[in-house]
Image (cartoon, rainbow, N blue to C red):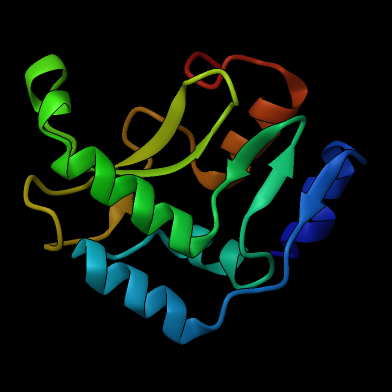
Length: 137
């Protein structure tokens, strides 16, 4: 898929970045012990992150690693929330909500991510930009 064309068709107010190198995606996957969804890898290979309306619709590969490691290791999160080890956070909406894929298996690193309770990357981008609920649409 031509991600820049696809997302630009949803809104002219989207910001793109230079693409990430394949080895950077492999490095990010290794640091998180997970296989990224193929469409997320493809998108990052065309734009290392996507900005929209003050939000990081899709984080850069480095930010995906940073945010996920923080969510998994911050002691306070474990006492306040469920463990985040089986989730792959990928973006935010600038008001504190983070968006994620859920692993298709119970143990991180044992299989690819699936859309779980969220939409696949293309649907997620479309719903966020159109202002529709990312959960119910």
